[in-house]
Image 1: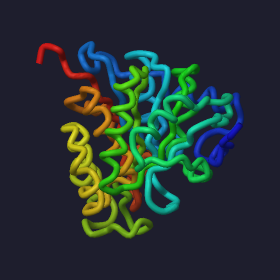
Image 2: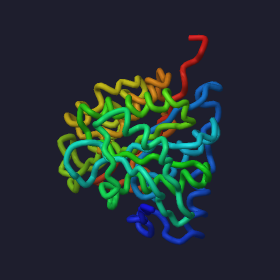
Image 3: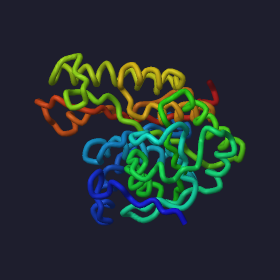
Image 4: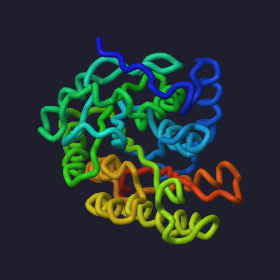
Length: 294
């Protein structure tokens, strides 16, 4: 059996079972009420920094999704921080180990997804060091302890739309009980990231959040999958643009017509640092099914 061992436990999130359980319970304690006006949620977008920075945003998304329904499977699209060439890479069998216990891969759904497109390939080793999916699993396991996963890393290119569409086609074709989540952080601004064109300190960080992040968030709200990768390439406002594009393409095919923003903050705001020069944006978004009366 293929077992993906944690690569970031003890750094991005607590490594001990007791500490991880306590932190995850706190971060997922506040689902957003009344989201979607009674419409079932189809998926969402979560950030993937360390839990200290973005865990509250990601935790609220997972808690809100779980409050909507308890799916059998969560397809999680991850970002690409370690390149391995072209194609989207699926971890198709086995389990992912976490401090809270294993999360099983939905092997049947994974196999069926592979049959719907040649743009997704089975490559579990592509996932060895990638943290954008791993950091979600303790939160997912806390609110949906029986939920299985299909982890897919999606590069930021034009194929991301077909990747998302293929996942949605598979869910539709087989009547799979699944949600879709994509993982991205937003603008990385400041001298440490080489992006300072709009000033240092408070002035630049305000632009990064209120202008640059908002460009990407608005595409999520409008479910404009086709624009995501180009927007991120031009303005450096999503490190997981492929994951976002795939997620939007998937939930749109499944019936979403809008994204609802649950939270939008930055690492500088979370840490309460008024003199910060560097900051990263985080947003939590969910996608409800269309209203049948519309």
